Image (cartoon, rainbow, N blue to C red; front, side):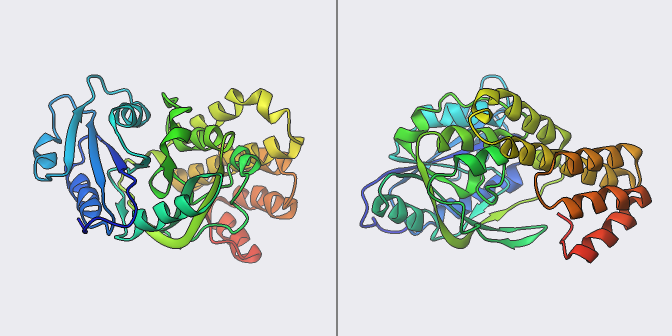
Length: 307
C-alpha cells in the first residue's frame, strides 16, 4: 500500500466471500493497490472448510474471519463491520475490484462535506460498461432510496462513516437485495454524496445475486418492510418501486425463456403501477407478446438500452 496519506482515518475493508478464491484474490489485489493508508482488511469466509484462508494468508494486511454458519453475505458484512476498527467502512463484494484512488477520493469527500455519511461513486460493469452517478442522487436521498433509483450506489461503490453504519447494525438479510434495504436505513440518518468517476469494476460471475430471482424477492420484501415509511410519501414513490420490480421480473423471464405469458403479466403490472413514463411501459407490455424480439423492438423505438 501507499505511504501514509494526509488523513488519519482508518478504513476497514470488509470482504464477504464464499468459494470464489479466484475473484477474491483480484479483489484483495485491488485493496493492496490503494493510494491511501491506513487500511485494514477483514475477509469473512462463509465456506464450510475455511476455503479462503490460504488466499487471505498471502496478504499481510488481511485478517481472516470465519463465519461459523453461512447465513449469507449480509450476515458476513455485519460480522466484519462489528469486528473492525475503522473510522470508515468499505464493503467490497469478492467479485468486485477497486480503482487505486477509490478510497482516497471518498475519504476526502467525507472529511470535507458536512453531514455526509455515505460517499459513493460510478463503476465499470463487466457486462454493461461505464455507469456514472445520477447528479440528482445526492444530499437527502431517502425518497430515491425508497423508489430504488439510486444505482450505481451499491455496496462496493459506497464508503460509509462508521458511526452512521453502527446505527444500522446488524444488517438485515433481504436475499439478493441487501444493499437496497441498507440504503434506506442509511438515508434515514445521513446525506449521500458521490465522486463522479468509475472507481469500481463490478464483476459479473454466473451466480451473481443481483441477477437472481432472490434479488426480486428481496425488493418486494423491502417494500413490505418499510410499509409505514412509504405511507409518509406520495403514493408515486411506492408505485415506482413496484413498477421497476415487475419490469425487471418481466425482462428476466424473457431472458430465460424467450417468450412467456408470465413475462407479459409482469410488464402489464409494471404499466399499471407506473406513475410516469406510461407510454414506454404500455408498449413494453404489448411488445412482450412477441417475446424477446418484440421487447427489443420497443427498446429501439424508445431509445432504451434494454436494461
